[in-house]
Each structure stands twice: as structure tokens, then as C-alpha cells.
Length: 280
Ligand code: PGA
Image (tube, rainbow, N blue to C red; front, side, top):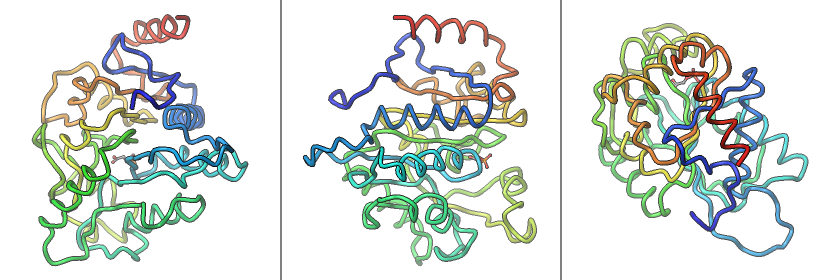
């Protein structure tokens, strides 16, 4: 990873770097810029084969702006995913890959069909099988065989989940089958006919899987995320707020809009720290 170009993930001062943007649109633009530079997605034009990039991807409303930015920059001929391998965080159990509510469908519609990922290089946990635990285990092995994740994109649930690592998740968990909390099912009911139709289980990368990523970029926008961001960054590290494990990650950036940052007790200090680092 040291050999990959990185001008932005240089902030060693704090393990969790906080960046606050004016709006959700600015969060998406900053996330696109950071990821493009860090991963070296820009088309070099040299035609030389470079080392494959392994990208961890997320679903949900929050990363949509980032995916739009990537698509725009791909269409402008600036970036390519030809050399990228992707692993999504999670998939619902009991929802077929071609179902419009599946994360397979989500990724196809919102990213993959618009850019140049090679189809065989994109991975999402398989839940249309009889042995779900074996499928989860195979997914973890596939991530390791690909060399591990270079950059993991994350959203965050209102109760602090990352992926579908719900409260009480082992802080060192691997990819596995997980039961969704009532809050997660309520939050996601907007995508289903009714709450009753929301799946009760999913396969998700574990917190240990996510922590093995070489760099992490977590995005959060909106006032409804402000308390969980505060708990994640400033609270104790606890399985009751699974995202708080990121305090142990050596290279995690949290990109927020002003609303999501509004409950941080030490916001002024984070802004000051970021300004100082940029001036180095
Ligand atoms: P959201 O979901 O981006 O739709 O808010 C985030 C999550 O549940 O991880």
C-alpha cells in the first residue's frame, strides 16, 4: 500500500481524522477526490498494467453521491475501474440477486452498469444458497485471497452499525450471518412494501474484516446521524456502538456534513487539527 499515491491520507496526528464539509454534495465530492487520489484510479494513459486495487463498497443512501461523482468522472474519461476488484459489505438473506431490493441490484443500478468494472471482479455476499454460514466463510476467504481491502467505503446506521454489524457484534468478527435489529429494519422499511417484508437476517463482513482494510472512509450526513457520530468518535469503544471500533484503526477518515458533525463536543479542535495538517 505504501507504493500507492496518497496525498490525502497522510494525517497521522489522530487515528480517526474528522473532515467536515458544508453540504452532503461536498461530502460526496471530497470522498470522490480522496478515493481517486488514494487508490490511483485516474487513467494514467501509459497502458501499463498496475497492481489491482481492492475496494470495499457500501450500499444505502449515503454513498450514492460518491457513486454519482465516480460515474461523472468515469464518463469524463478521468478515471477507470478496469483494474479494480470490489467487495460489498453485505447482502440481505431471503432476497434474490435480481430482486430490486437486493444489494446486488442496488450496486448494478447505482454504480456497476455505469462504469468499467469487470463483472467477474465485483463481489457481493451470496445469500441465494442453502448454506449461508459456508457462503459467509467463503466470502471472507475470497477477500483475503484478493490481498485484503485497500480502501473500505462505509456509511453508518443510526445505532452505529457499519455493514450489518449490529449492536453487540464481536469487535473482531469475520463475515457471517447476522440478525438485523428492529431499528435497522425500521430504517430500511422505506425500501420495502412494509416493515413485515424487511428481511430479518443478512450476511455481512465482520468488524474484524473491516478493521483489516488498509484505509477506511466513512461518510455520514444529516442530523439523524449526529448522535451516532458523537458516540463513534468520542464515546467508549464498545460493541454497543460497533463503529466505535474505528478508534483503533490507524487510517480512518470520517467525512461529515455540518449536520452530522453538530454534536461533536470537540469539533473546533478537529477543525483546527485538519487545518494544521493541511498546512504542513
Ligand atoms: P443510509 O444507511 O446511508 O441509508 O443512512 C447507512 C447504513 O445503514 O449503514
